[in-house]
Image (cartoon, rainbow, N blue to C red; front, side, top):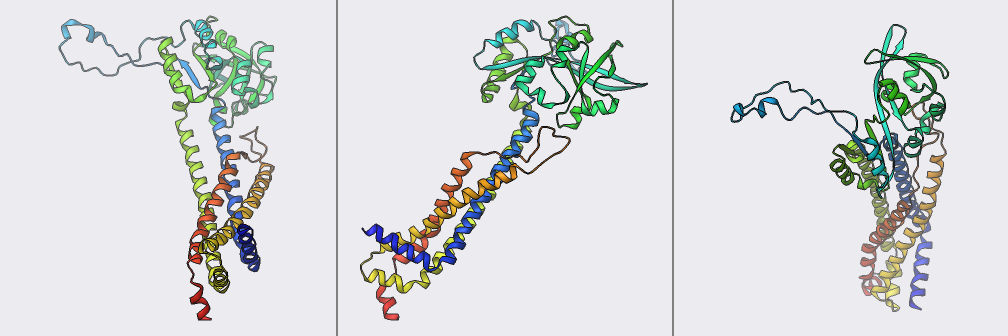
Length: 419
């Protein structure tokens, strides 16, 4: 019975100063809405920026890195065993760049439980002949089906089709910037020259646009078999195996494992893209900081309004205590007022935040560097809404606790005597 009465009194006090109550609720609403919209947009932006690289980056890359020779002939000579060796201009060891027994490695990796899929890769440094000018470029030999499935290759082919590489012999997909340099249209034939001086005519079957201008200016794609033919290498000549995992967080540990088992170099995605993870973390941290500051500011607004309400309602509080309401009852009344403002403002803020996200998500965003993006990126994460409403309730409760505590200690005799 007393709880119903407390709620009824709180409602009366709220409606008696409904304009101030509305202002406080709107402060919470604005804070929650901006908190959700800001975090959702920033999370979507992080996904977009990371996706430009991470969608095209394997979780583990297995390859042979060219390294300087660690052992020199003079060090193996017993005559100079006890001497100090001063060796300058150490050259790379005469090690193979291709993966030895690549077929067996691929079969073994396919049996790994943590491996989602893999794609062999082969690169060739070539020159694209543009009349008398030679333009430096790289041809990536790929398994088109595996690249499309694991690394979204087809999403970045803006003209033609990636599948044409497997259907049309001696074909190539050019980076869109490289195609512009060569003035090569789909269906044209471009001539390349290898480092050994051999020339190959290749038919252009599409354009590739990654969104990174430097990449699109030099990169092109053909099948693994085509690049093996260009380099005059056997069918088992592979320089890299790209591995996609079921859990990307296992990449560092599995990279070390694969490197040890197959006696090759292995690089995990966290090491290869450390700067992108750092940037994403900083952007997210800034978004949370700004959102929390907005909620705290709204909390101060509620505190000021409740504080003023106490001073203006001294008579009402005194009468309540004189008629039998205890200090804890008065405390509950003002706590209910604060939480009511928080709940109402929080719910409206959640709805407003979602509407803002929906509007942002449908604003057209078109740029030649990002052909797959048509609207501004937004990430609808339920965690943002949960954090927003919880923080709203906590902030408004704390904002109402001090005024409620002050109201509970009012001595009704002093107030009534003063009147």
